[in-house]
Image (cartoon, rainbow, N blue to C red; front, side, top):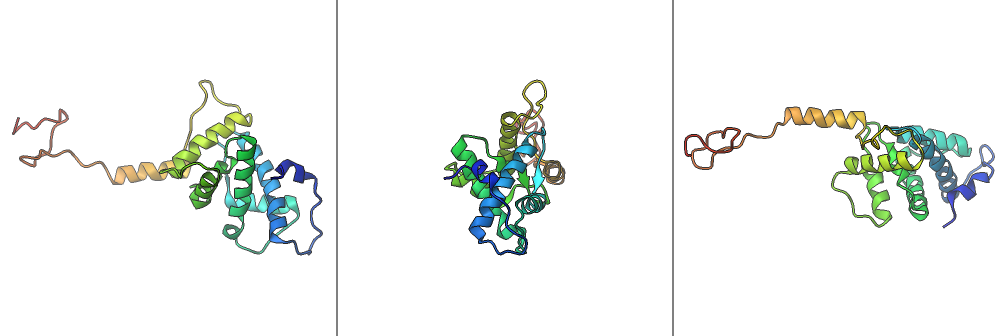
Length: 188
């Protein structure tokens, strides 16, 4: 596989000229990698799919009328492959949807590099983002920093925990709520 940095010097396509999708994807991937590296330079930084799509089209000089979800996954896949080939952390963890979750494109990026699909995509991506910040030179706080969910995901999980509290433990004999000791006061 050709290194994405080697493609960076290619000239953008002339305006209003059709470009094959494979060629466009390769051009977009080069610029996506550069933008994601820039994002990784900011501790707890991330970028949305729509923001990244707009930036790569502008920088590559190749635009599409296709919806972002129909082509950006292939671009992120190329970036994931390039990161794996270089032995770098997954830059694709820095790209999130409008609701700040990583979504199915991230799962495909993880599994295409040979890793098992994580149970919790957003927790996995938070850890991968921390690796990116460390690897690509973000100013990390003393103590090494911490993996963090994006603000919207973190708030959604806090809200869900408040709305769905863990049910109280119940005595299997008399069906009364157990005290904090875990031992039934009525049954002993």
